[in-house]
Image (cartoon, rainbow, N blue to C red):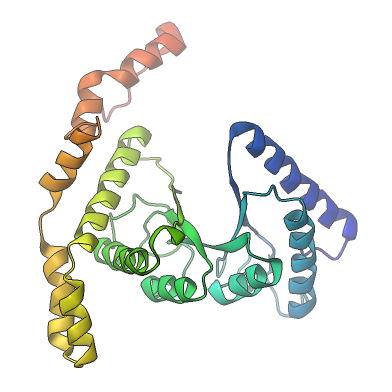
Length: 285
């Protein structure tokens, strides 16, 4: 979308409009745009002009966005380009959505940050700007690893949900981000990994809900660093597994989703049905 050739930009725009049309038929209400546009060498691209061309392309897409849809822009510091990326951080993403309008907001992918980035702070900043559109949940040790969410940095996941819960309390139904799992399961059973991820998100959310917010606010106002931190760590250290299991049960789900999935023999049954005699069960099962 930032290409110097207008014909190339037009192809990218048309592709996104086609995606919107497919999404409309499927009942979707949003489109997420992550771009690989960038450069690998100094001087390869003009930073400001490429950003302006991108904004122009996005504006053409935004103008044809259905009435109740949202357009999300997604930032990433590197990969596949390794010198510069057109939308390299949340600031660039915010500049784009503010220029586009009310139906545009920023989407945060947990793996799209440099190591040790304070993602919970980015979350808070975008909330303050009224432009936090949603999340792609995953986890990573080095880059865009697309590991199972909560597998590497569970405390960070809790701290992110702490900001989300805090915003929900303050803004009510007006604060309603979109959430999605964006992961790559090439070692774990994909369905089991998704179930594991949902449980991790439920647990992080539950822990954020039990934070003593009145106490936390008091400690923050009185500059009591230790007690403010301990208020968070106390909630994080609380075992909420029974609570979230009961919540799943009351909503018609399983107390232990992975156990229920394995006992159902769903994968084995469906695979045999689809592949007939060609079915070979995964070694992990």
